[in-house]
Image (cartoon, rainbow, N blue to C red):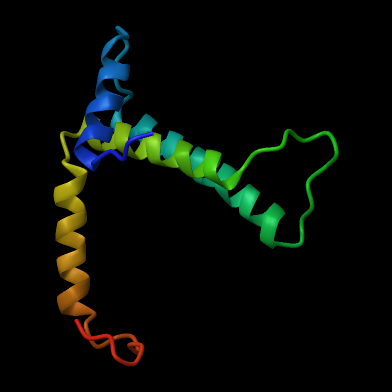
Length: 112
């Protein structure tokens, strides 16, 4: 499968959601959905890395599937608010490069 840009991901999700009369959920509902998906991801992390093994009756899910669900809802949330996630990412990365440039110990030979 070919790699996709964030813009392409946002367009793909928008094309999918646009085929339904209901469209995007409200921001509050979207936040609830995102919280729900994060909870499912947390549950999987706890099963894989924590002290809570899965019950034999529980469906097998993967971290990849749960992260994909989080990403889908996040993209829906951004699209519903007309937020370009690439621009949001660039803004945050610049913030980290400047504000946090001396916060962490760099590996030897790696300079910003």
